[in-house]
Amino acid sequence: MELYTIPAGTEKKLTKIASHEQYDLVSIQLAAGEGIPVHDAPHTVLIIVQSGKVLFMVEGREQELISSTILHMDPKEQHSLQAIEDCNLLLLKIK
Image 1 (cartoon, rainbow, N blue to C red):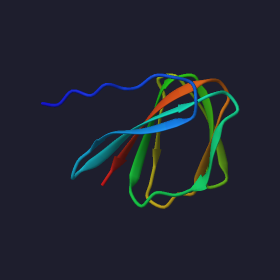
Image 2 (cartoon, rainbow, N blue to C red):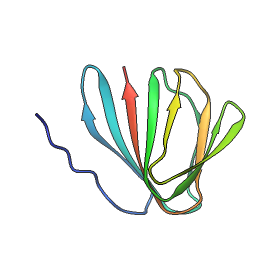
Image 3 (tube, rainbow, N blue to C red):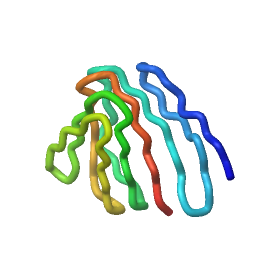
């Protein structure tokens, strides 16, 4: 068993919480208006919105995410994001 603490805050911050053979877990905090430019990941990714509202652009499609929603992305899907409100996200990268 392992226990992790998820950081809180509203300034742009990416914090790796855990890294294992099967997954990486990253906490992302963004203030309203902050974003992350277009990129992709070589693995399946789940984005779990803990609080706030964020706009994702995935392969040319916009998707607004709110608290308690989860976004699934396949490997190599181009995406970017922009915080509409202060938000706290969890990124689970499945290897």
